[in-house]
Amino acid sequence: MMNEITKSGRDFVGYEYKEITADRDRASMYLDGYLNFGWITDETIQPSVMMGKVTIKLKRDRKILNKTELTRLQRHFEACMNEIDAMEQSKTSDATIWALVIGLTGTAFMAGSVFAVSSEPPRILLCIVLAIPAFVGWFLPYFVYKARVRKKTDRVTPQIEQKYDEIYDICEKGSKLLKN
Image (cartoon, rainbow, N blue to C red; front, side, top):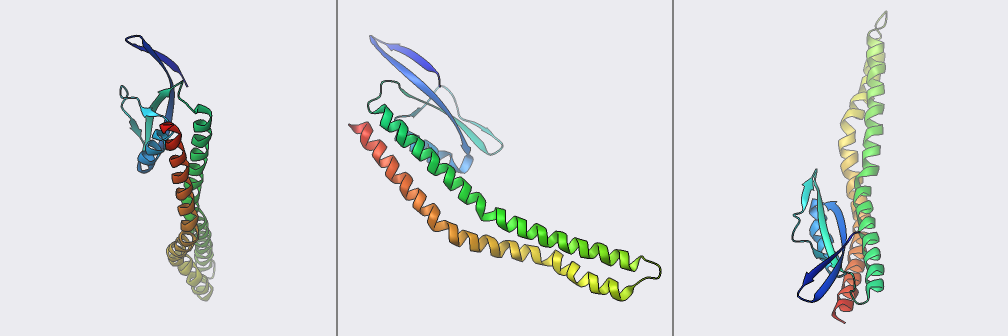
């Protein structure tokens, strides 16, 4: 954080600065949240977008009332947002691992099938026996992935909603502190 002192007439206002980087689809939620802790967007600097991430520059009066409590609430808000991000990522990570393991197992069976047919003398029956689980291993990952994502989403969505409710309560407390 940096500090700046501006002069307008006789009044001096010292600002502290903060830079946040968030996914593009979450940027407005971050911005709305930070506004409840006394932060405002720095109008002189346009938000930058790189690889789906948005960098937003914020500032707030250094002498804001209830600064300690606002900072505590802000950290709680940031922790909740990080937990939501982790839960969103967990929806697909387990499913991806299962799909990859099944696909690689199918590939191993296909390699065995190829070795069986290319041996001297060719073992056609063994090739067919190994090719069946190989094709199943290549066909099945898509459906396993979709089913596991659906199952994990059903389990995680209520937890994410609870975190959003917690965030709304935190922001409401911050907003009330700003009005005092």
